[in-house]
Length: 564
Image (cartoon, rainbow, N blue to C red):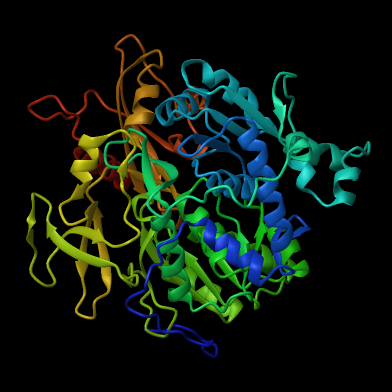
């Protein structure tokens, strides 16, 4: 059904299948450079880079990494916010036939250490402000070179020169972008200036080579590297292009989603390259920066999470900003409330739709069509060349009858090759025939649209970020006075869920308040993983084998909230 109160925009009905070419992802970049050399490829806070310029920078960066000893199959960790340097480094690593490993630059040292050790990365290209964390984390890893990226070098010349002015605004921006770097750490931009471009004759990667390791907690909460092949990323970019019907060389995509998240990497980088669009990059989501960019280079496509749309609409209302250039927004990572979609569509005269996917599906597997047939609140239809099944979670060989609830299985060219060095967990997740277990309970409606019923997994989704209860529990359990803890999610409106900690206190401790728990958590947890509510229990419910029953805890937490 449609809920537009304005004229419908031009609509596009996607195909049911796509022909995925036998080529590496880098061929996508080569075509954009060849066919649209003078079109702007990247706009980072006002500094533009054309496709031809990007091609030259990638060749030089590949030469610099090759001089550092990077060879096909090596893992190169990128610890960067969105920036032109991130785009260049990503393509340069792939051009060498090496493997990109994406990391959140705000990770703590323990989280970074685990992923660096697990991937076996030998070179790290890191934002200056993340370099101290990387250096602290590298002790028990294979990392032999750390290269620091000065983000201010990606700014327009006038903005970069203004950073040296003795003004509060300049000092604040300099503090946000830059950080101290020890003398033994290489400079990314200095290496690039000295490098010789990689020869065109250097062998290109193959479609079946590993392109990317994206870390995901999967069903257990233990971070695992999802192994994505070139052909997986090529397929999902092509599927996205078929779904949107984008005309090459015309779109302006706003890169507000981080590349270290699979959703942002595909929609804002590989998809945009596939359609030779312009990506307007932001180091973090700031509605004021987005509206400033909208005046400079109006966007046409916004991949986002639902809360971003609300914040941007609020800012636009305050400033009287025009958002009508956006023809569509695609939301993932959390549910898109119908009210948010309706508000966006009224403000832009474009469409707001919801999609579904996982890191293991590169990541998009289903989506609502960009037509009047879209159904707010539902996951949508399978992407082109994507198959789904709904099965009994206890017996995945048994398909559920039409309209019955069951676990969603997905198969298609975008489905990953498995978890890095984890054959047992790969076998649990990937079934014979290439079927991926999602861990989500769904119902397929009579018209083919898929409706999410519940999560089998106990993961919490807060503002689009995944929070794994076991990781939060492991840290809170170390807090003095806390004997035991169970972490669950509770509904939080448009934010998805919020984190609630149910704790058992030492009998000598009379009380621990929420502020103290959050202060303890801030030492090792991301802000979105910090508890928003605290419940003190005399004991935690457990199964006969001693496992904490989180679902029972959650029910108790919700009951207490209703009674309060």
